[in-house]
Image (cartoon, rainbow, N blue to C red; front, side):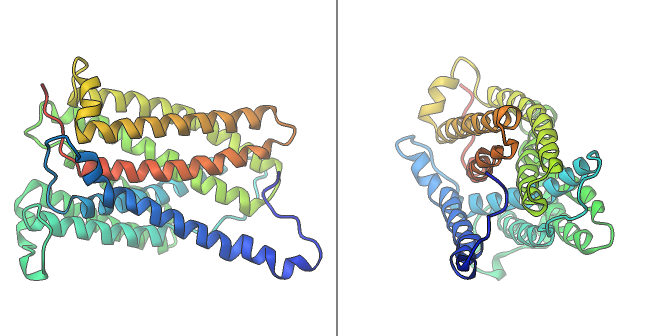
Length: 335
């Protein structure tokens, strides 16, 4: 298996165009629609028979949060893989077209939508007149929402500038703001929780966005030793990222659901159910990553590792959607 389709005969004029162009676009659009249904329909399904009540507009908030997370992963992954390429001697100069400006635009819209919710007292506004923009400066959540809006605007400007590496600073601001938002000051040990979320979100963005850009880079380079080297280097770093994600995820879960009640809450609370689904998805992603690494090390053609790696990208996209849903659900009560 290779990264480029073999070309031959008259079929190049029609069928391959559909498979490599329109067909891929349709597949991506279908995956995006399916991923959007997870946060939109997820709250009602997760809350069924739990006795819990969702916040107004939980589905819309979850969708916006999913878009924000996805928009964060894309530029972070691009910066990460470009950094890895620098360690590959003789790597081709060709690089895939940056998606960072588009991701920044999506992130800006999502952050603006979330800020409008905060500006109406965490309620979905029925109109522009209900949005109190000035009130955002008076609350902690409002200030964090504004930071994210401005940060994504800065990411877009940096992506279009001559020095796209400067995106690192506004992206870091988004991650810090998300870590602080997820752990209000009323929580027990909020700084510990924010620190765990900071590491968890950073590693997740590097893993998800990095794999996406690595696969796009390999497609641009075509079959080459540099492509094999890049995939191997990414796999080694991804193993460390997975370990950090697992450790911080388990610790964060135990802070919200104590060990003596966590098994019960995983099935009786909406948060626990979605968390369990996320754990199972991450486990599936880890299996795909291991499969890709085994192929990379042992297969006659190391680039056959691209097949499970593509499936891993899709699975990680679902994990992002589930993560967005998780943030919109009520946090379980500590029993």
